[in-house]
Length: 269
Ligand SMILES: NC(=O)c1ccc[n+]([C@@H]2O[C@H](COP(=O)([O-])OP(=O)(O)OC[C@H]3O[C@@H](n4cnc5c(N)ncnc54)[C@H](OP(=O)(O)O)[C@@H]3O)[C@@H](O)[C@H]2O)c1
Image (cartoon, rainbow, N blue to C red; front, side, top):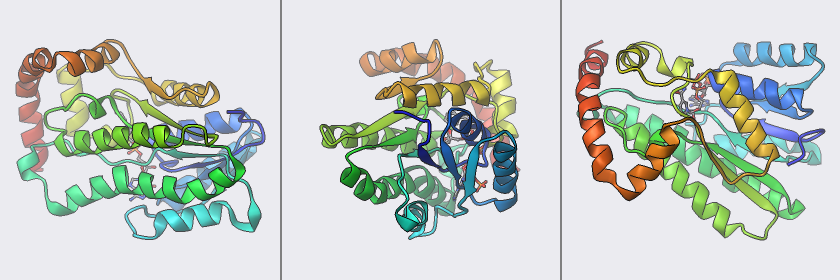
């Protein structure tokens, strides 16, 4: 897509990856509608973008509220303003044993990572189909292709988001509206603070900086890609898991054992 003079709604804009996506989009000429729950963080990002000569506006919202997505698209398109893309970057994770997860933790993961992106896409499709253009970007995860121990509910949510992206892309073929699914690997952001980052160091997980991930997401938008999986060897393991899952079972059994003490410490805290 052409980013210069476009308007892009970005959820998770106050987060580690989202903030960098916001700067990257603004630097390439897009007006960015920054969404998240923390108004002060969003205001500071908007001020920095404007200071750098870009355009940004803050639309706070809690995506776990039932009508949040509808309202967000309505505010993004009020006064007949055109919307060119929605980037679903908001997300929550959970590292720990699945058996210890509470119902509220499960609900927060599902609502934020799956239901909200689907509701936002649904609401955005009305203007997008009318203008015969638009892009829905879903930020998934490598764990959305490889079921990962101790991230069980999070993995399930990203599998769902990937399936949604693929099906919707096929449903919209020929409509002028595109769907891009991007799957980062472990990235240094607040989502991984605490036991997750200690575990990642201990098992030597490859890590990306959020600026790198943001650049790749925005490049993929501009290049009109359908999917983008980040990192080597993660991309290879995604393919291996699809064809020979038992080989991945074996590798992840050992890694799962090394992760378990960190997952347990998370539960006890
Ligand atoms: N970091 C990684 O290792 C990694 C790897 C693969 C994929 N990802 C994916 O990348 C995306 C961004 O993650 P990140 O690493 O940047 O995490 P982060 O720093 O924790 O940011 C999460 C963002 O989601 C927003 N959010 C969470 N719950 C929300 C809610 N109920 N309503 C509205 N906004 C909400 C947060 O906004 P407020 O706090 O202002 O509400 C924040 O802006 C997520 O979808 C994540 O699953 C991350």
